[in-house]
Image 1 (tube, one colour):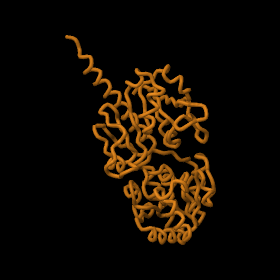
Image 2: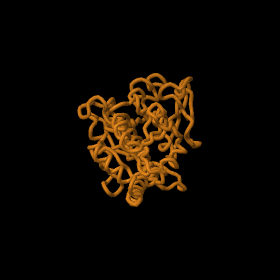
Image 3: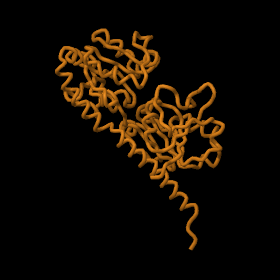
Image 4: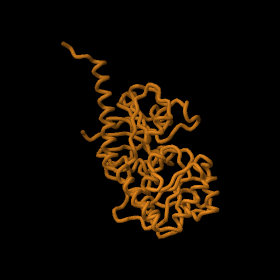
Length: 328
């Protein structure tokens, strides 16, 4: 397909970094002070030459092929503030990063529009949202890890990677983390992790090498989308231990790539097994890496996004044909 000019916002840095591996030009609006969504090419990522910052006030003077929303605010507010009327008629996609927050089964999505393609990052999310008339599809995560980094598991502890765990509370499993670490040695990394006795924030470039040294990766989250840190850890070969909720049961197989359960006490037993048995951890490491590489392949991810962009452009072409029928 042709190289596209895509307007989107900086909402989820890691996802945006992987999305921009697609062979298109991505334009990120910026504002002074970098308020929500307007941070542009924030530090911590090796952004490619195809990612461009653009002042928010200049957006209406730039040509784009499509608009990719990534939050309710983008859709409800931002587009009306920075896009011209003509730009608001461009082909549109909405990337939904999360499952419904307010009510898990009956929440209506902010988009209810047959002319917008709604992309979910997991099948669980698609299942739970009420998307009304909006066409939807699922694009599984795609990630990259350094070829030179492989699981060693030399540190007989578990690692937890969550940003803002203390402030995000029960949904992200702050209480589970606190409970489990009284019984099993765990280290927490991420934004504000030091407030819970963690190691602090680790850059995206440095994280793989750190994660690969831990015996296992613990995912304490009750209700979220599938974390990119889990996908990255699996591609490194880290055994995954986590709650059997949302999408994780489709990713981790007990005794093959890690252990999942809805009972934290059983998970504690499994973690102790992994700490006591490096051989078991190495066995699960092989399964985790095979699953990660097969399911979260960046080439497949890019192909899926190219197909989504092509579908959106085709939807617009068909609408245009209806608006301007051919003259005989």
